[in-house]
Length: 227
Image 1: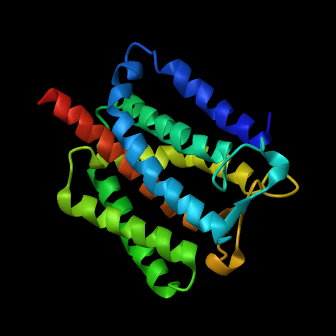
Image 2 (image 1 turned 120 degrees about the vertical axis):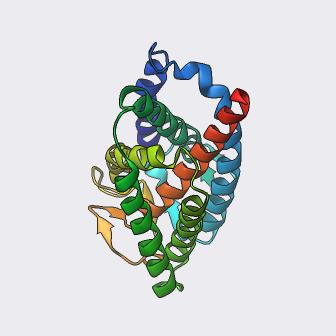
């Protein structure tokens, strides 16, 4: 088995097993996740495929199974199923176990920081494809959420900040923190070059967009079932 596959499956085992925890009972809500996985998967996989073709980023075959869908390794496709699943699971766990935490002020500061920084990075780095695209999308989604003020927004901010811990671990390994060469590499021509250890700063905004989209669809589907 490839290192990328081991990593992805490894981070999935815990959330999958704990989905049957009685207090959260996430297994009962998986049906609300399906539409979000389809929509975000479609958007991000098309984006991923195009940027792979254009060599904005790429994958080291040394750490892959060698099975591809288009230009994307199977492990990368699984990433867009397993990571959103894990993050929505965390979202539900935090709501179940920490319902009394006051999040409004923290959420406001966090979302404004994301919006302002994403817009600034996009405007000053429009020539970098990855920087411009990921920061523009994060700005669009963040400002839309701020304007619409959905009920789940404060909880999402908490979820994102908590998910940064496993995100830094997984992305750190993917970008070469524990290997002689990165599993996923980025063209220096299309990023600003600022990194958190080995992780391009742009990944913070990429992850934000992925999470807010899938949680928005999850909460929408769940809300529809209760109405």
